[in-house]
Length: 634
Image 1 (cartoon, rainbow, N blue to C red):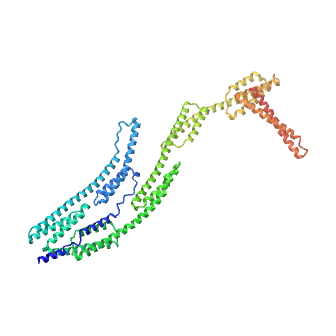
Image 2: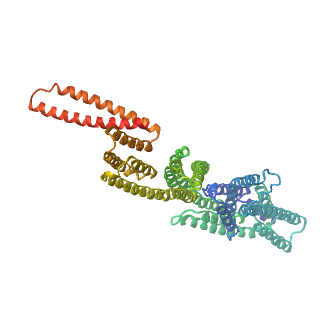
């Protein structure tokens, strides 16, 4: 009977779910899981962010990995953000330190003794980055320690199982010993199940050893063959229940999309399936095929979803590629107009808004390269724009210096108190130069203009005040000269009072009176000459020649007082030229009159020419008289 029982045990003792089968499924599952989408790293150009924004970003990442339910993927994502920020932070540190060093050298003349401490925001970015990397490293170090611990636990369990098998073979088998051995065996099984994962290179070996030892244990337990069969039937029932759970997950996809959570739940069920003992041989393969088909439904759904997502990713990439191609010409844009730069900025910002609005992800490598090129193009445009405004600001600073110089020149002229025509012309020239200078920095625009305007206005107000005094003096001189002329005219009417001595007194008084308003100069001079002529004519003891000489002397004196020698020579030349022209015209007209025939029309023309000749003769006589006065004055 014992022999039959032994044979029965040997015929059923082969495990249907061999270590190779389990390891194969585990590898397949791991492969499926690695095909999941990697955590999407935000498509952000960190070089465009301020220090405050970088601090907020890292604080949010730290809060997310410290929060409940944090996953390894979140740790990887946060650590990837830290890696992306690292070069940006290095650039910020270098720029800040160089700026501080330049300022130190400008103040001290050299960099000797220079020490620099980064600002609080920069130190905060460093601190948060280290904390995130520390949490990530601590997590994976803990994982490795846990796996090492699990390895040691499972190795110890295998040793206990070997010891159990050796004890089974070295002692007599009785009911009490078999029972205690069975209890120890079940305890080892439970502890094996509770032990977590270990490093993958040892996993297959441990499982193979474990299953081989279990096989040996069941082979040695002929008396408990019935218990083993019962346990297998129970395992079959449990495996069937696990199959149903996975099948239900597959059916649920009719009403909801495939998610990582569903796949994770299926993986958890698979872990339970692995740790269940063997089922009856006739059921083992069927159950396994059923379970695998149920898992395939989930994997196929996940693959299909991934294929659809790849298509969506490619479409998203194509759309963003068009946006990049649209902004790429902006990298070489150049203009000398602020208005044109601002208009171009609105255009490129519209493209940036389109880019940001496309929320979907792109194929990893291609998308990463395209994003890098896109943000680099934006950065190039804004660097070029910044360079334009830096040059513009530099030019405005130069303009400010030029306008300060004009203010100083205007203020110097004002302070001198010189309001001569030369100074007035200098002020006018300064105003013209001011208009030719471009804009100054906005914050100085009003103050520098007010300063220049104040100096110019003060100069002209001062000049107007003095001109008013001169005009009042000229008006007073006009009144005095008018009174003198009236006295000369009155003396001419009273011939008894006329004499050359009184004429000289009148001339002396006239010469002693200053200038009159320019608008009255000619009229008062003509009236004065007329009065002198009348007075000279009234002097009875003078001959006609003496009277003409006296009148001429008076006219010459007026001309000499009104012009310098250069002006007199210029007037003499003008008079000679006009006299010559009139003489030529008169000669031509007189010659033409002789050719007119006797007719009504010719008579009218002849009369017209004679009128022109008479007018010209009168003008000629007047010009000759004025020429003689000029020549006398010279």
